[in-house]
Image (cartoon, rainbow, N blue to C red; front, side):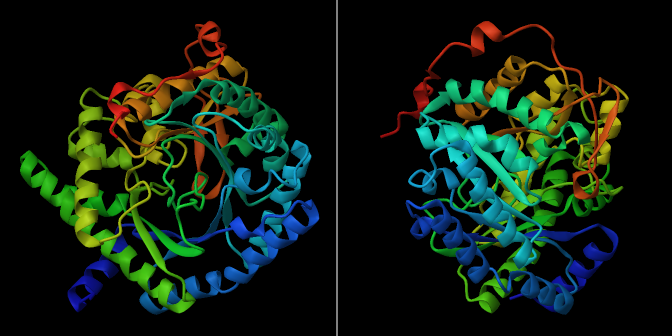
Length: 454
């Protein structure tokens, strides 16, 4: 139960510390929508999504009004389309028709985004998977709310370098197809290693095949709350620091638990997980980089940054699992550049580089997220960056990802503006030495020896 004291604390966090429920995400299975006829398949998908999610937005708004808790986004995730489109799709443009059906359903239900335009290819690609991947430039530029992802590696299977190499070219193509906005369509796509089945956060959300017919997942964000708490223990020892973060994460997760249970009850849909991820926004004071500075760094990127981030990520998880029996998704600290004003400032003053961000991804919840790179970066270099990130995830048994935006027409030091929660990103320098001889090898990198646990 949520008692009066917790309600008062929650109100304080909302009013002064930027606490919000970032998203209520309804996961919807499309497995029984399969049809060999493309028109029928698209119709089935539209009817399933709109039927299940017709009250999602209204319910979220009602809960927000009743409890005074901001619920920023209402979203939908669906079964990976690569798994259900193969019987009906004969060419990449057929998959684009499915993307349009998803987009119409998202628009008609009123949700902000819909995820699940996804291929799962950590070990190999089917013909269907390849067609979906090749359709991404058109699918993402011709739809408004569709988000896409590809899982190309895992600890158990290794890294599918054929998929990684292909994605280097596809990311370039997505950027070029949206050149009028400097490649901004890339912000709706993420490449994963060890993608979780129950992630409510876009652009990587999809409804895993291990999930039920329909489920409610909630994502909570509270960088501002943690930052404010750390201001009260400045100069204290590590034990006090860790306890403060852990207790704050507990309080934030309780808010997500409340919203998730209420949404589950009102929609008559099973409750899945609460994802406590410190997902920043461009708002001043809502920054993971500022938390790192509160821990004692002059700027994000200074020596000690990776250690400070590891501490933060671990204590957030420990606090979260005490607050809810069903913590899942990513749950930890996000370090997107464009969505975090502190990260933007660190890049602009030279405190943080792409290589340092890569090191930080070994201990955070995701990876190289919302990072703008020069528009003339080669497909092979993009694939090499992706391979490095996949390797970090594979070897460490954790989720990693990339969401890179080749900023067409922009050079290092210039800025691309996305607007809203996506913020703005300074274009970061990329190592210009070639990795083509490496990424152009065919096949896959084998799984690490410690993956053999049967």
